[in-house]
Length: 536
Image 1 (cartoon, rainbow, N blue to C red):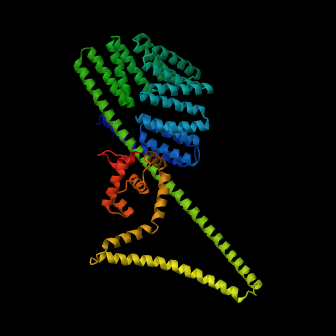
Image 2: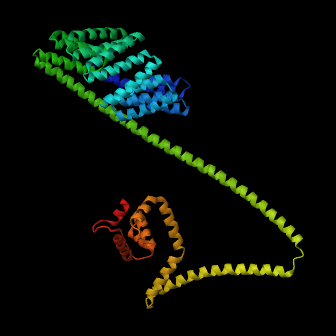
Image 3: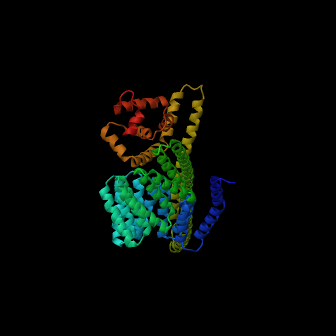
């Protein structure tokens, strides 16, 4: 024979390995089929109470499909439900992020009912995050919108939330005021489940105020309505509360009976949290009846169930965190793919444009060449009588231009040859004019486009660090061009070796230059030059 716990475990195993996969398959098929996405979303919401990680993935897929089809309303509803799942898993920051995204969509759609409902959810998240001021602000916004659209059920829920907020602040008069307003709205909407919830809230307030007769009255009315609506989970909590009231009034036997009733209901519905609560209440009753052995036994049962609950919750939260991590990682990958797609699109468009421009340029060139040929032919025909002197003059100018071009080329070749020969002379240790030759090589290297390169570098650097250069020049007016260049390289965190190479000097000469710059900048001994420049 199997024990109750073994039967429960087998049932849960069957549910996970058989029922859950079929449910997931149905929902996922529904998401991709041509059906109402709200239906698929509602099915996922029902699944979220027991399997939040699986439900979260399904809702995320619905959200992705809604974005693809530009269905903003469904996208907002998905974000709101993802926020609720995160809230139930105690990930309050992520929950607020999803609710804020949903709020933006609802505002654009001007859907006041969904926006107000989302404000209620956000108020609850802020309350759990111990931010009562922000929580009240969200509830007030929800209240204003529900009044605008005259939504009795929404008003009742919001009044109840505000009343609960005041109850936790021990502002009982305000709490009673809002709970009674909620009760009136639920009656107007003919919502028996809502009325039962408010009765339960009123019973809790009276219990806090040690008004046990009034508390028992409201708990009894709440329980009757829960039984009518078949809400067993809420009924268990109310039965437990009635047991607490009876125990506090000294009726231990009757209180114990209600606690045992709550325990049996918890076992029937497999509600482990209420089961642990019932064991704790039974232990308290036995303790008050001086039956400490029984009290210890049931308190241990309560403790073991609570440990199991917390362990299960931790496992679920870890699983859910893994889901969130996977979702974020996948979102990053999608964003990267979309960026790559955009880049590829830009490259393709650019290539097409370049090809078109080249074709146009080719056509224009051919046209101009034809025009030139045509003009040349016309000129040749009209200037057929040109004398030989004019032609000779043209030929002379052409030879002069060619000669000048050759001179420029030869000059550059000469400089290159000269530099090579000088390097050979420097490498020949038998020569005694080594220092002069090194100076000549350095001068040649420094004069080959060196000034132009520095000018371009300084221009770009000043554009990037305009305020930096303004501060330098305003505080230190006696800086030379080489000082400014050295400061710019230090600002870039360039190594001494690279700076010496750029200046064409040795590292010893660079240290001298740095020393002189420190004196001009009036930097104290022990302070780092690079750190000083970075701080400007």
